[in-house]
Structure formats: C-alpha cells, structure tokens
Image (tube, rainbow, N blue to C red):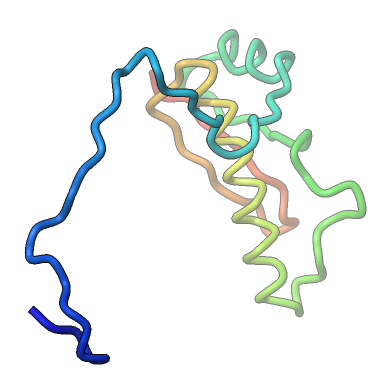
Length: 110
C-alpha cells in the first residue's frame, strides 16, 4: 500500500503490549469543586416542596433580562452547579425552574 507521497506503508497496524502493573497513568481533567454543605442540604431537603437555591447565583448578579444570550448562559452554569451537587447528594429525580426574577427554584421528587 502506498500513501500520497509514494512511500510504502505496512498493511497491518503494530501494537506494543505492556503489563497492567507497568503502566503509570495521568489523572484526567480537574477535580470538581463541591460545597459539602449544599450536598448535605439537598440530602435533608423536603420532598415535593419547591424552594429557592440562591447559593449558586453569580456573585456579581445575573445579567439583565434584555441580555437574553447572557441570561441563558448564566442559567446554564447555575443549573449545571445545582445538578452536580444533586448528583453528589444522591438525588436523581428533581425539577429546576426559574422565577421571572431569575431566581432558581428546585423540587426534589424522591
């Protein structure tokens, strides 16, 4: 088999096998930052009751409603943080909704 430059290329791929105990692996990605107080709060939260979750709002506040794209981005980030903490708390059924004043609310279903 020849490639574009006319050099011959092997038709089979060669593998170098190593033993599992000889491998040194690097850690993937960065470690998630989790607020253990919020995890505990979610674990103790009443079921089927709506409550606000202001702890994850940006320190400098939410963008104004006129900046729709920025609002959507900020909401996505807050939703992501809430979901991460709910997962750490072992909560799998929930609903996140936003008020017109851009405050996230949460209902834990189970």
